[in-house]
Image 1 (tube, rainbow, N blue to C red):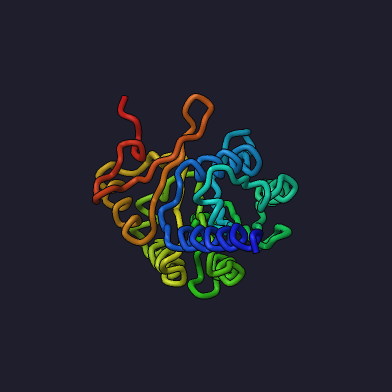
Image 2 (cartoon, rainbow, N blue to C red):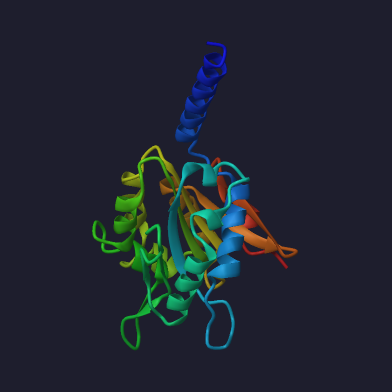
Length: 241
């Protein structure tokens, strides 16, 4: 009987821990920084000129990977799988649940014709209800954390204000994930947008899904939530010169 008491206490502790993770919708920015650094080191595709190329990736992970900084993303997305995704992206192909755990989708922008290109975020989120994102969400367990990553911030003119905007795709994602942990993360700023429009659209995105920026500072990744109390953090905007 003596050994039963600590075991019972352990069970209670684990149950409380599980409930804590379930109810915590706020993603730990340290975890996001570790993920984003891993993506940059192991997945980031390159242009023919050798510069970093735009791409979008979504992954679902156990909730602990979005809460506790001691977790390792490589345990659910190992370097072999990351290398496969990178190879596909560099070839202009998509990752359609291509990893061993079937927990990753990714794409670069897709050329439609000589004048039009489908942006990478749109590729993953559409068509609504039959998109790669929908297929990913079907694989994701109810208690999981879904991170949607774009190398560049979503552009205002095409991604957010045109007929091909990603808003409904984002709503579709969140409607299927209410009460769960979700994060939209970008790294670099798409500089062709007007600053005022960018701030407004970042606020609009954050009303649908929590928006974060992860930026490399002195060779280390730092992440922050972009909108707090409807105010856009300057960290998520172009640095003033």
